[in-house]
Image 1 (cartoon, rainbow, N blue to C red):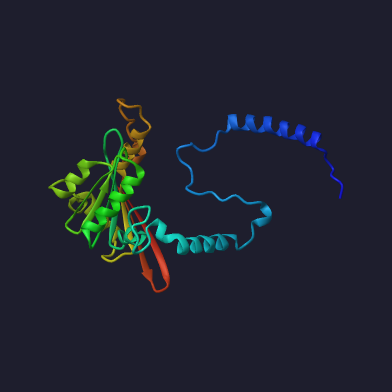
Image 2: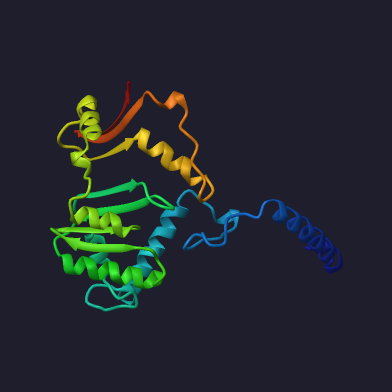
Length: 243
């Protein structure tokens, strides 16, 4: 079959498209360069079928089975310096994540139950080493717990006599009002009056005073969300306290 377009015509078309692409890129620059996917797969539309996700998943599984030792597979030191199985073992126990006020940014803390404190610390140290020494992360293991936080003050409070959620009156009142059962598949609690100023402060210039919450938010109390199993059915319940 004869070509419809000759090279001279295609060069002109590509040049015109290039100018259009540059104008679009100037208006819509896209995602920030410092936050990109770990791996992006490109393929033509003719490759997109109903089972493409399964095919890619099977390919990834084969690659992991064949080269997993290079990434820290069982019995090998690996490039990462830790076993992937050990990393997964960090989150087999009960785990909590919470956000608390901090300066200049809120502090994010993760606490999880671990059986081997030394092994847990070794895995976290290897991860932090991969991320770089400038990563603002503090971590400790104590009393069968691994705590990782963006604030050393939060870890000091956990180990010492700092404020605890299970000792907070507003938290206990919210749970009682919501009627949350003792056993759940997981739960979350949000102190609305505490978190609204927290997020308002994120958009406030450093040194400036955050905007006061709207009067419409004043009656709102705590938000409690939990999951529960009923046979093969997974249920989620959300409760919002309003004064």
